Picture 1 (cartoon, rainbow, N blue to C red):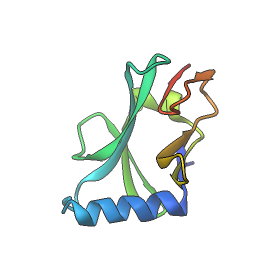
Picture 2: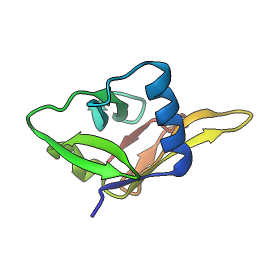
Picture 3: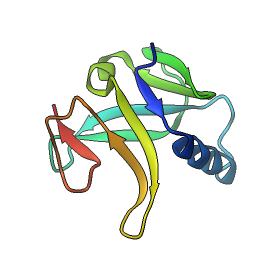
Length: 109
């Protein structure tokens, strides 16, 4: 079972970023959490090399890597790309988040 889902829009935008920034093909998309942000945790989303303790997945053709310890915070999350008048960027729809802040990029669990 895949821990998270990436929408078609998110995949398209990630591929665009990968091409634009000449990111090596062996780099995977790192998804994780870190302390900080207005609600306690904020999300990590970026291309990175695999580390020893990473779990690896292929989601919609995208190689995704995440630390095992982060999976419990991210399970079931959907990452989407939003392009609206007020908001342009990745959105994190996380069913595990008890509280999220207005910016939508941090949460508490």
